Image 1: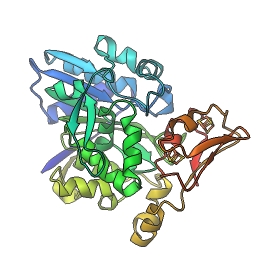
Image 2: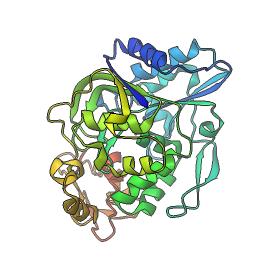
Image 3: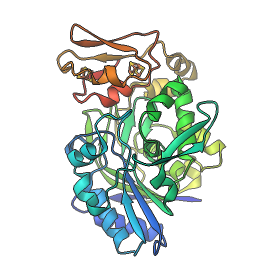
Image 4: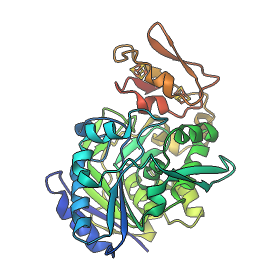
Length: 355
Ligand code: SF4
Ligand code: SF4
């Protein structure tokens, strides 16, 4: 039976929760090469809640240091294409300082591995991921327009450097296939431990929404499926409705059934947690409506003229060139758009909404 820890936490007291996580999920790190992977979506301030908070990273680094590993690497592959370079994202979020001398741009070296030919026959994965004896993943407790939640499984999408993330968005072509593809990326190298920053959570149109919520928790597990089931439940979403969890279970990666999970702590759904449009109760409980939405005919990104600065980032980042600037505002070509929401993810002004 998988185990998930739910522990109270603030950014000032993270270390106690991290110590508890390592006690519940003991790891032999002596002489091992350890990779610690925070969720670094893009260059943003720590208080925007878009990336794993530096206090969580710092506490995990300090904990790992005393367990005598051969080496520690802290790294991620932020963004799509080469937007907002790696160093800038780590610097701005405070994660560079928290990583200290262990920071590495893991996007600089990659190795090709076989992938699911339904999407791409091969993908390149950061060499640091393949070289690590132990991987500790530090997801952020957030919503996501495509996968409803972004937790343990989705955090591994950052194992892929550069433009591949966008190319896979394009190859997936629909939200349902995107859910499935994310699991294929995850299982290229399943991390050994997950410590989730759920001190401040994100609601609404994640993964870069301005709606933050004090959740006050640190979660941990050595099984991503069980952990994501707990995250979904805390957000008020039935994990059984999430296609990526269904697929992960089919592949034997774990179970999202709460009866099959030992929860250490109190699992109490957060009242009225705002899920993104694709995850609303009316949608997730109604397969017919879900199918209509998944058919990519309803939800499209639109830019708020009050917030948009016409920087053009969304136009540059769209993997299928579905956006163009008209009168200083991005316009979407609905025939081309594959509803990947990369533009929403990358907009530095949070100007893009799903409507
Ligand atoms: S990325 Fe955001 S701010 Fe920049 S053009 Fe697109 S919508 Fe406007
Ligand atoms: S317009 Fe936005 S949502 Fe549509 S394909 Fe381009 S990046 Fe993805």
